[in-house]
Length: 164
Ligand SMILES: [Fe+2]
Ligand SMILES: [Fe+2]
Image (cartoon, rainbow, N blue to C red; front, side, top):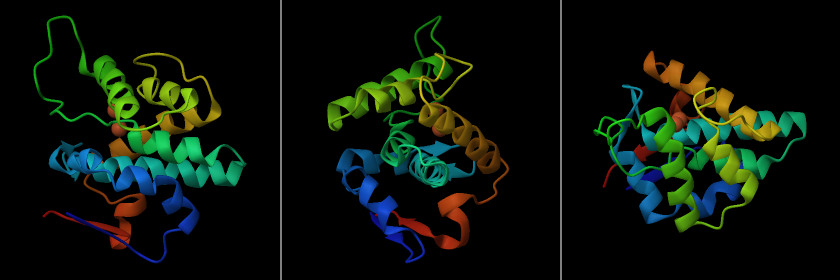
């Protein structure tokens, strides 16, 4: 699989996400559809980039915004899969994403918390400004993607993912 990134994308952002984006397990997110119109990998990149962009503007922690934004849906299963009775995907998948991210990467507590709270108000209250940002950009991206509109890095082919 090839990920082509246009020159327009800021080097500071790419540097923060490079080690995650190059990971073979993480790249598997491209196999899952998300919000009808995109893949989970592209959605995660969009959330990461918008969170990073806003954190940069506000002078907040850009690393947490970019990394937790990228990892917030790191779940290697189809969200349409049946869960055990009484378990709901909206509450379940952030826990899986936090666990998978922690197994694969060195995760800071602030990043873990932001992943766990990204579905707020379904789930825990975000504990940091960056966590609020990720929860908000996730919703913006989800709605836009569900309308099959390109947002953030999906716009004008700023990132193109070519399956192997
Ligand atoms: Fe999610
Ligand atoms: Fe998401």
